[in-house]
Every structure is written in structure tokens, then in C-alpha cells.
Image (tube, rainbow over all chains, first blue to last red; front, side, top):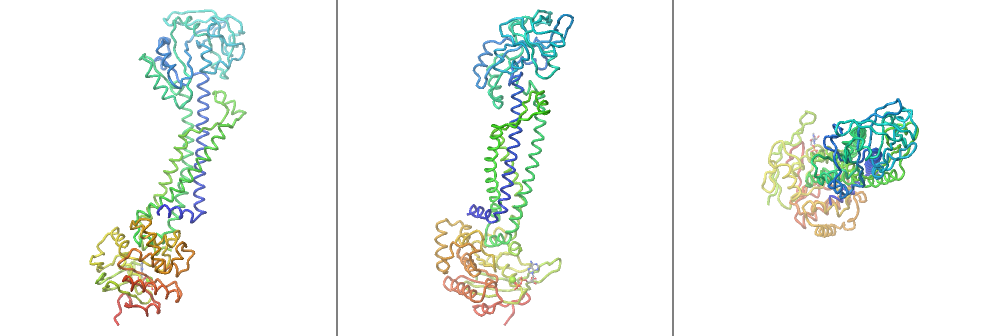
Amino acid sequence: MLLKLAWRNIWRNKRRSIITLAAVIFATLMAIAMRGIQLGTYALNIKSVVELFSGYLQIQEKRYRDNPSLTYSFVVDKNIKEALNSTKGVLGYAPRVYADGLISYKDNSRGAAIFGIEPEKENGVTTFIKNINAGKFFTSDSSNQIVVGDQLLKNLDAKIGDDIVILAQGFDGTLGNQKYKIVGTVKFGVQELEASLIFMGLKSAQSLLDMGSRVNVIAIKADNLNDLPEIDKSLSAKIKNPDLKVLSWTKVNPELEQSIQLDNVSGIFFLGILIVIVAFGILNTVLMSVIERFREFGVVLAIGMPQINLTYLVYLETIIITLIGLSAGNILGAGVNYYFILHPIVFGGELKQLYEIYHFLPQLKSTLEPGIFVNVSLSILIIALVSCFYPAYKVYKLEPLKGIRHT
Amino acid sequence: MEILKAENLVKVYQDNGVPVNALRGINLSVSKGEYIVIAGPSGSGKTTLLNLLGALDKPTEGKIYFEGEDITLKEKKELSKMRLHKLGFIFQAYNLIPVLTAIENIEFSMMLLGIPDNVRKEKALALMDELGIKELADKRPNEMSGGQQQRVAVARAIVNNPTLVLADEPTANLDSVTAGHLLDLMEQMNTEKNITFIFSSHDKNVIDRAKRLIILKDGTIEKK
Ligand SMILES: Nc1ncnc2c1ncn2[C@@H]1O[C@H](COP(=O)(O)OP(=O)(O)OP(=O)(O)O)[C@@H](O)[C@H]1O
Ligand SMILES: [Mg+2]
């Protein structure tokens, strides 16, 4: 009966209910679309950045992140391989060695950041191999071939095909040097990086650095960002070596996470404003609808309706409108988000260039991540219930005679 | 059998700080089955008295005993419950819930008592039949005339078999013919079902039909 009353009361003042409904739908839709674009774009950019080089996750010696020294290296043993192969969500992995060194060509010498990699394995984990600018990438078994940053080649005044010498301090502290042939250059759009970057085969690097079969990092590709905590947990449990640690991209690349969090705060702030506006809208319409019915409420209180039931009625009306609005808003929001997944907003010009420097895709894409729908719906429902409190309290305090006399 | 007794009722309103003496010492005893009209000029205190007797307001001084219990001492919640179980109300207008049909309005009082759905419907229909308003069952208040609305209000007031029905100027908004029909109805319920009625009016036709007449003047009962 209360439900019937609530339902009919809603349609009694159609205009007002439709306005309230429209406000809830609009707010839900806006919030879902905005959050969708925001979170979808974050995911896109995170993917683009971690897939470029760092990987979704890495396995490192536990001290390596804070002190990236050759000392903190490890052997990729059977246990690690089995752990990686048996963990759901791991799509591929690539072991790497990293060291600082000096590269010399004729009279020119430059500092170098040396990465020992296996191109075939990297292909299943990262995309940077595709950033080859001139020449070609070496294969895993080719020895003494290197690919250098475009800017480094220029700084050395060398050409592809030239032989150079690399000097580096090895695992045991002694200096080693070896001759290599430049077979290609890479370009990422960040000159600073390209002025020191050297890729060589993993084995070449291990021999130069005298580290046997040890590596510094295993970069891992996962099937999606949401499963990282689970993959982390599962891997950590399987890997027996207590000196090893699984790090997600947020730990490997904290700057990226920070910049996203900063941007996220502004998004949430905007959402907050949207929700406060809706809250005042609801407060206003509910209060109006309640005051208009004081006389009628007075009569039912006089005949003995418990005050609390009348309060329920007010709440029920708001909840019904809000739930209808939320349903419609969620459906429309899902539609809009789906549209922007199929048709991301692609932009060009200066913004595009700026984005590309950070290896973000110049795109705004959405997502159908369920968390967005749940959070937005809950926020709006809660705010509707809170807005309803004051009108409901007024009804709770209404005296039958005051209501009957109300004009 | 005495069901209601008022002793030395005084009601003083505060009208912007100015005290208004609406009732100045009312003594009254009502027995089961009475049919009482309270008459008197405007401002004489009719509404005030009915509100006190109906437990909608509290007297400034004096006692009201309903079925032997002093209701001036009871709390709001208890009074609400008492009104639901023992009293019926008919107001001058806007009695019915606008979004409910006639029959639903009658069922509403029964719903508050927790009477199950099917019983409610049957009882409401039987009563409407008895009052000759069965054809109004599915009409909303705005589809009914004032007289029809008041008759539905009577049905709602008596459906829970109250000890006492209070009506403040129930005929004030009706023409004399319609008012006559409403009075017929209440009189019929009074004689057939022995329901006690107290209502106020300053309509001569109504006053003439009173079985017991109480005339108020300046907040006191006028002695004949
Ligand atoms: N809530 C109130 N606050 C202040 N004064 C009031 C209030 N209600 C009634 N009064 C005053 O009390 C007196 C009695 O009023 P009451 O409404 O009981 O008279 P009434 O006989 O019902 O009059 P009417 O025939 O016009 O309905 C009047 O002087 C009125 O102005
Ligand atoms: Mg009056």
C-alpha cells in the first residue's frame, strides 16, 4: 500500500518528477561518461607506456629498484620459469640486463645505458623493438651487434655498419671492453634518452659484464591491468627465492602513477560538484512535494497513521525516482562508453605531439569497467538519501493539526 | 454507558504573544450511541473543543477521560494509536488521499490496523454497499463531488468500528440537499450501528436534526 501510494504520488506531479528524474539521469550519465573517458584513457596510456618498455610487472632482486647495481642480479632458474609459465594472466616475459658504460668511436666517447635483451622474447612483452628508426634489430643469437639511440649515433659521428668499442664495469668489479657493430638506431622522441641508449643481445651483455647467466630484471606482460594484484600474489607465492620481488608498473614507474593520480583528483572533484548540484535539486523538489502535502499528511496523521510510515513514504518516493533515474542513466552511460570504446576521440596537433613525448596515445578512450557504474550509482543513491533527510525530518515532526491547518 | 467525559476544559492559545481564551471551562459527558451537534457562532470554540476531544491537541487545563482513561496524560504515540483504534474523523474538506480511489481510501484505515488485503476489500465493499456509494468505489477524489467525497469520508471514519466519530463542520462545503443526504447517512449509522457521533455546525438544518444540542458561546457551554 505504501509502495502504491509512493508510486502514485510520483506521477501526481508529473512535471516535477520528470525534472527530478532527468536530473538524476543526466548526473548519472555525465558521471559515468566522464569517469569512463578518464579511466579508459588512463588504462590506454598505462598500457601504451608499460607495453613500450617496462612491462606490466617485473621480477627484480629485492634491493635492485633502490640501488640498480649489477650485484643485485639473479639467475632465471627452473622455479622462476615454472612460476611464470603456470600463472594465469601472464602472456609473456623477457629477461634483461642493465648496466652503465662508455661507448667510443674514433675520438668520440659518450656515456651509455646498456640494455641486454632478447628481441624475440621482447616481442611478446613490449613494443620498443618497433621503434627501430634505421637499419634493423639484431636477433637473440647474433653476437656483437648493437642498436643505438638515434641521437647517440649523431653524437658519435658514426654510421650504421661502423664498429665501436664499449667499456663497462663487470659483475665482479673489473673493467671489460668489447667491439660491436652498429646495426640500427631507435627513436622514441625523447632526445635525452636517445643520446645514451644501447641495446645488445642478452648473451653479449652477460659476456661483456662477466655475469654468466644472471639477469637484473624480468619484464612481464599481463593480459590486463586489473589482474595485476592477483598475478603479483600468485607469482610471489610461487617464487621460492626470498631475495626476489614482484613489482607492478606502479612501483617500477611511480612517476606515471603519480601523474595519473593527480589528474584523477581533478576528475573526482568535478564529479563531487556534479553530485552536490543533484543533491540540492533533489532536496528542493522533495521539500516542495512534502510541503504541498502537509494538509493531506495532517489528515492521515489525525486518523492514526504512524509518523514513521509517512517518513518512509517520503523516502520511498525518492528512492523510486532515483532508482529509475539510475537505471536509465546506467544504460545510457554504458551506451556512451561503449561508443567511445569503439570510436575513441583521436586528436592531432600540438597536443598529439605532447602526448607522444610521454608515449601516451593521442586518444581519449572509454571503458565499461563495472567499478565506475557501481561507484557512480552508489554515490548518487547515497546523496539522494542524504538530501531526503531534511524533508523527511520535517514530516517526522509534523503535528496533525498543523498539517490540517496548513494552506 | 459513559464513554467520554471532559472536566473543566480550558484552552488558551498564544496568538503572537497575546493569549486567546478559546475555551473557558467546559464540562461534558457523552454516552455511547449519542448523536450530538455542537453549535455556536464563529470563534466560539467548536473546532478547539473537537480537537481536544479527538486527542489532536492538549488542553491548557482540565481533564478528558476516554473510556475511563485520562488522555491528557498520554504520549503522542499512544494518542495516535488510540485515534486509529477508537476514533473516526471527518473534516470539513480534503479528507481523502488524492491518489487513492474511494475504496482504497476506505481500505487505508484498515491497512493501518494491519487487516489483510482480501478482508479489507470485502469489508470496504460491503460498507460502501450499505451506504449506497458502491458505484464510487473506483473513483479518485477529484472525480467525485464534495458530497460524494464526504460520504466516502464517513465510510472511512466508521469502517474500523470506532467508539466515537468526530466531525468538524462536515456539511459546511455542501449545499443543503447534499448536506441532508450526509446527515441521513450519519443518522442511519448512529441508529443502526449505535456509533456515537459528535459534530459541529452552524447550519440551522443540521442543528434542527440534533438529538442533543450543545451551544458554545465565547468558550463556554450556554445553558438553556
Ligand atoms: N491555533 C490557534 N492559535 C491562536 N488562536 C487560535 C488558534 N485556533 C483557534 N484560535 C482562536 O480560538 C478561538 C476559537 O476558535 P475555534 O476555531 O475553536 O472557533 P470555531 O467555533 O471553530 O469557529 P468557526 O465557526 O469559525 O470554525 C478563536 O478566537 C480563534 O481565533
Ligand atoms: Mg471551526
